[in-house]
Image (cartoon, rainbow, N blue to C red; front, side):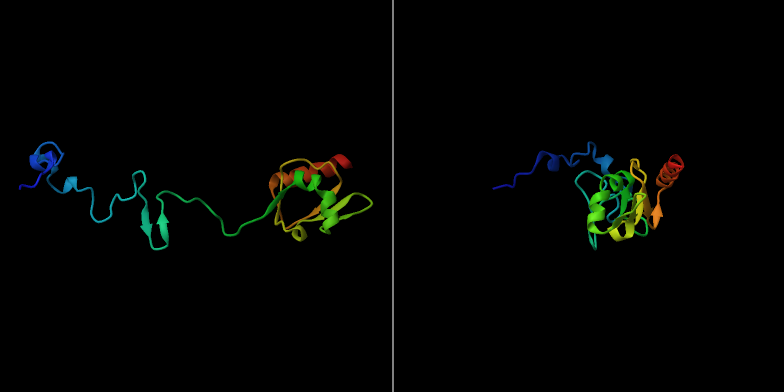
Amino acid sequence: MTKRRSKKKSSGSNGYGSRKRNRGAGNRGGRGNAGRGKKAKHEKQTGDGIHQLGEVGFTGDTEQNGINLRDIDQRIESFVDHGVAEKTDDGYVFYADKAGYDKVLGRGQLRNDIEIHAENFSDSAEEKIDNAVEIEE
């Protein structure tokens, strides 16, 4: 009984057209693992697991936990209840580090009189706080 071969194997071209078209190093596509992982559903395997090709983005040296002005303004009463803010005669004093926040961000507006103590402020937050102080005076 003879072995049955596929039509591509028996043609000698293996699906590349003419026999001559699949010769030489130019058709190799590189050496070793070159080009591996560039096509869909193919990922490069590294020592620590799967590594997808492409940029991973800027992560920065430290992570910062921020809170927006809007959130401070809306939740100031609950912050007073939890002991991370105080109610004074002129308004409120909010301590961002006690509440677990490193940075105050500028989304929203301050509708209450709030004095904010924090390590860092975004540019927009500083501007809005300064404008709120000028309006009050």
